[in-house]
Image: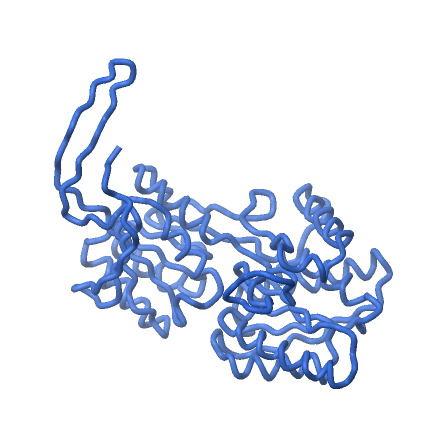
Length: 382
């Protein structure tokens, strides 16, 4: 196997487009000499080879706010740390769909990239146009579908996981110390994933109410109006807990989740002042955000007020398409749908929150998950 390939990821300026080049842990050896050692089975012979090796270049396009949005883009970035002989190029995140289309055209016309990966369903139309022109360029879309032979697509039945979160939320909200009111705080009202998550979540709550005779209600969804507005999310979260008296808040808000944390902290102070014996609990979305509800989110330990998260495994989709492409099995024209049955979506495993969530509730959620997998329950996506 090649030796000398285990360097840490490094970033540098890209001379063609701006942005960053990120070399994976096995690809920090651009244009260097690689010594390859091959062991010939039972013969035991060893062959030494030297050659110039340049890893394949892969561009990753993510809409603003880009990475550090506590959602699917960050999961993709985690997948990019795996040891693969690839040099990643990450351009500056475009702010609009028009900017993204121009960027994709520039990347495709350069001919420098084995694969251009687009993260997010909001760029379906733009990718459709670009890929139709640059038919020799391989593209991938994580979170959406484009029906062209040079686009590999991956979608997520995220509403199935949100249904399970609704079950948990309803059971927790019905406890004696809570008042049965559930709030929903979304990022942007027109976001397709947010719409589907809210639909699945509400169905889960309704299902639990009917099945267990719970005294629970769900308020009309509120929206931050942005993917990255900490201040607004903080104020709205505080209001949901202290004015609307929510027991728990479902918060598919991406990077604004840090504002949700601030709102939870301020709401807890209000609860203490009022002598209320309850916690401001929330449920995250898109990636594992459970740690954000820990006493110290940077240490990631201790009981969490973020009791679970609704997760779409963008990292699995990214890795699957990339590896297939590297092995000359590019799944162009194909759509892979990730769901509960294949492990592509789910809620998190309550690693930090079992002190706040009864074990019986968790068992109930897994029973409903099996019912969805078996087809006994169909989850709404709108």
